[in-house]
Image 1 (cartoon, rainbow, N blue to C red):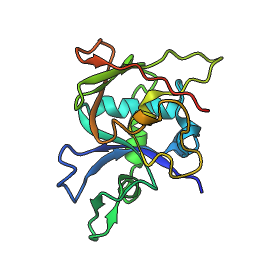
Image 2: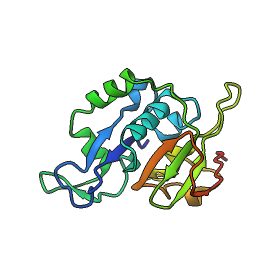
Image 3: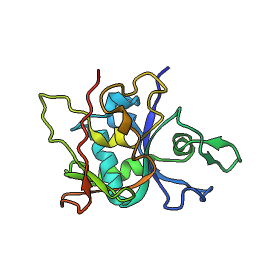
Length: 186
C-alpha cells in the first residue's frame, strides 16, 4: 500500500502537550498533488512552497513531514496512541490551507535552517526542465521506507534526520554548519 504524508508544525512543547501537539498542517490534495512522498517532493512544487510558508509563519517550531505509517509517539485526547499524521487528520486544517493560500506562497526562500542541529541546507534552484528533489520533505520525513511511493535512492541515511527538529527558512545565509544533501532515486 502507499503511505500518505503531511507536513506538520508542532507546538514547542509537543512532547508533553497532549491537547494540541500538532498546531498546523497541510493537505496535498488542496494543492493538486498526490499524498505519497515522492509525488510532491520536488523543487518548484506549490505544496512544498506552502509548507515552507507555514514554516516561515511558525519560525523555529518543531516540524515533521509525517507519514501515516510513522511510529505512534503521541497519546491523543482519547488516550490512544497515534502519530502526527493522525492528529493532523483529527482537527480542521482547512483554515491553515486557506491561510497559506491567502499569503504569498510564491515567496522564494534560499535556505532551510535546523535550529536544533545548528545546520542549514540551500534549496536548489528551480529548473522547469529538470526534476529536482526538494530536501525539506525528505530531511523531515517520518515513516519513509514503510510504503509505496516512499523515497528509495542516494543519501538514505539522512532521510528523516531532521524530523521533529526546530526548523526555519530564510534568505540570509545562516551562521550554522552548511550541509550539502542531494537526493536522487535509484
